[in-house]
Length: 214
Image 1: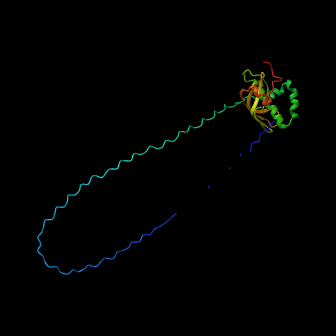
Image 2 (image 1 turned 45 degrees about the horizontal axis):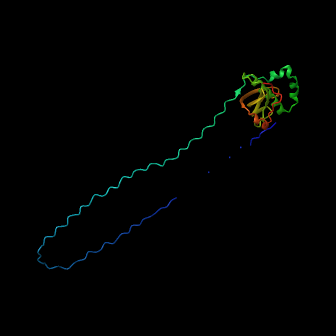
Image 3 (image 1 turned 30 degrees about the vertical axis):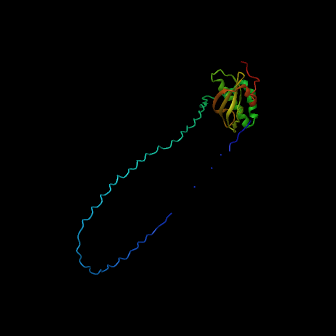
């Protein structure tokens, strides 16, 4: 039995201006000036004012186009796994009550609590898969074949299980809950996966022994 353990945290400045008052100068008194006959000469015509050209109009500023930001594609979401099939009827008690399961009934109480949970859940998994009407004839379930299973005194979570049928192995995931007295399964859900390639069997300790013939 392999168990996996999970372990997962805050300006101011002010200015003053002073105004200086300038003194007003005094008026000067000038001496008298003698009268002088003066022939008035017409004053020359003032030069014609130079026509100033119209001020050049500055060209209107054309707003520049905003910089094009590179388009980043959002990552594609990972396809969601299909939901597990929740068992509406449970079969572990029925299987164990069968006279052919006498040896199993005697052996279960001698197992450690967590090992008993595994065996009860394996029995339920086999019974559920046999009743799916998909042509499978499962004869073995390994809850920790592809990934470690999580087991407590009353539950088993197997995300990387494997099921053998007709000398072929298939991926399997299931959640199983056992009664407090460890005599029967009280809740079960599962999801059957794809066939496991034969070249991966040895890596995951999957054998062909004792499988039913094709």
